[in-house]
Length: 114
Length: 115
Image (cartoon, rainbow over all chains, first blue to last red; front, side, top):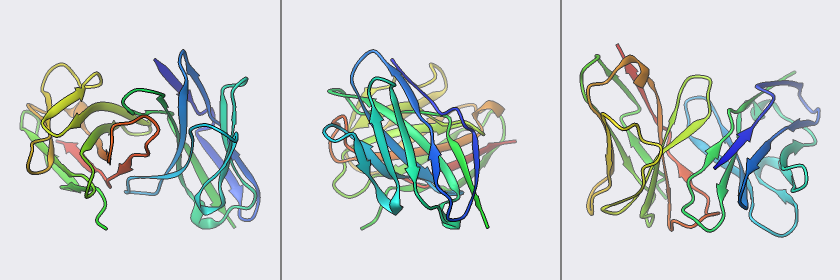
């Protein structure tokens, strides 16, 4: 079984400032890692994923994340946020080698203000 | 390219009624997943289906909930005798293959409200 922890339920940040959204996971088996974004009243949109290879992955909208196996973390970062980045962000994992159901964290609400 | 289509977007039911939620996967996708999102929480996996088969229903409540994905037509999540605690957003996702690591494409969800 896996679990995902997003310690920050809300992150307020000013426009053009950098941001990091934290994600830690727990699993007894190897996992793949994902970040999704959810805008109000919409479904989830994939930002980026880590399957293997380089631990730094780049996604859409200028976001990137770094996989750290020793710390079991997959933090999401963006060097300069925009108002339009205001949304809910979910970290998720799935087991490698099996059907790909996702286990989600509870989400982090990113609030960008002027 | 049409994405994952869910309908209705909003559904209101009284306690004891039945709720039927529909999901049409993306074109070419034969694997469907249902998730439930309770207020202020993340999404919880419910069931994973392939055409005419339930692959994993480990997240489905034991009673009142059922899901199907027939050979023709959309996937249906059915909730019988709804209760207030069933109020949530229900999301469907699809992928072309049921392989770990494949990204799932999500619909906009059905928001179920129980009066």
